[in-house]
Length: 305
Length: 276
Image (cartoon, rainbow over all chains, first blue to last red):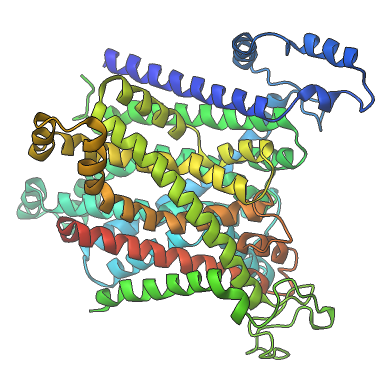
């Protein structure tokens, strides 16, 4: 367990370091920051002085080390638009994004678990076919388009639910459905195939022979084991939803990290963009690490030796 | 028996998309950017006020939706073809090398894959959108950076098992050089996998490009793209439902066709999978 933990932590650290390197390279590709900061008529001496002040005259590896030092203290510079530290700006908006991603995940599970179980139990019947069609549509309809359709039908036409902003639980419904739409397909298929394997196994037959009600056999004994592969996917999907939220937040005017970053891209507000990319990379790595470490809790048979 | 028609229908849909991309301007009813303010917001022909001149209706500037969807196919297909060729080529080359050579080559390439996969695709796309000049080139670059790992990971796995097979050992013992083994003996054996991945990627790329263009970070007007049409239509969602449904249907149909065809190809190449 200890060796495994150390190896996973090391891999996570390498991944974050890689993300930092990519951001650093992109930052250098973005062009000379001095040209953005100084007025048009600045002299050569002004440029040189500014470069020296910002440390841009030093060799690239040194600049990268300085960048790393700043990054570890959470310092990504000030937002050009808001004149405030970039990371703090985004962290302020993080709860809204997490709320949206959790709600999206909840919606996806709420749909995928019953659908996956039923399509395995009634294999080849209409539930199974319905699940198959939903899975195909889920993968072919981009989340932002689903969001637009939801706004069109449920908010504009029927006026059942609010479409824009974040003012209460009702505002969460449409964006959560749009965000949770995509992973439903994969989750349903995963659960279906692991359920099919498990329904064939000896202990399920034993349970049935002992006269346990079918409901108990399926929902208590089979699902508990069949859920393991699904549980391992949840982390990945949750982390991906944080990325997907970038687009969904724009569709629904949701005041989260994603919308701030998209706005920042338009405003060429680079500190905010790079803080956003690193924030999502760190969350992605941490969530996946936690999921890997929690396998043992979900299924005691998996203990990392 | 409905299963058997799946590849035929998928090919028809994809064929139609390709035809629009290649020959669209010759059969589109209007010029994609032709403005006719008097005809603005005409509904599709089956609704009151619609006309067959504009079968799927017009947008706020009176531009024909059908013609714009046909024109949008050109951008989607161009981006998809370049993106697939580049990410497939780079990914396959790195995957084959990692799997065949092992050791340090494999370690470096595998770490690169890990790093790439630990950064969520959309935030990474934002980063490059902030840095690169917008347009087709940027969209293709972002897609290649996101998707090469797909190919590299899967091809690497296949080559790892191929490497141990007798025909490779025999070739090596017979003194065939490494580049020759890679090109003549390994590449043909992963071609099926590459074809399946490329087919599946087509739909995925179309959705990705539409997403970027919808955000305004991808294809820029006056070039027509399905994602850009959705972004325009979004502002008129209360008055003109066809502006956001029609381009979306085009995206969905292309993506659905490519997914179905990809799945079918995979099952055909690997009959074992059909049983599950």
